[in-house]
Length: 105
Image 1 (cartoon, rainbow, N blue to C red):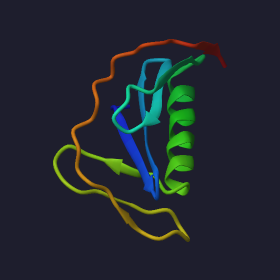
Image 2 (cartoon, rainbow, N blue to C red):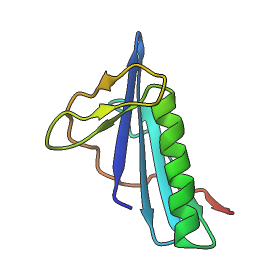
Image 3 (spheres, one colour):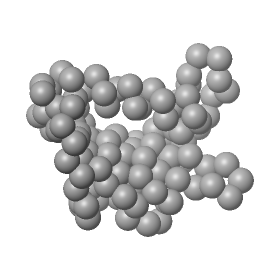
């Protein structure tokens, strides 16, 4: 699964959340926009298990009002029963890891 970035902006809150699945591992990074944030790496028993968990987390973020950011233009994020949100276009932060928390599922 390719690298994905989501952002949430409401009032004084300006946060990002990113995820990438490579093999049996997913790496998530989150924090305030403009910072490096925190990083967590999880290792699963299989690739499909890592993708399922990443998909579940993305659905949760969309339900909370996060919108996905893409490189080439606006993208609209919708969740059933929620208002449609438009994301501003922004180049994703590089996926450099500062910390790694390995958790076996």
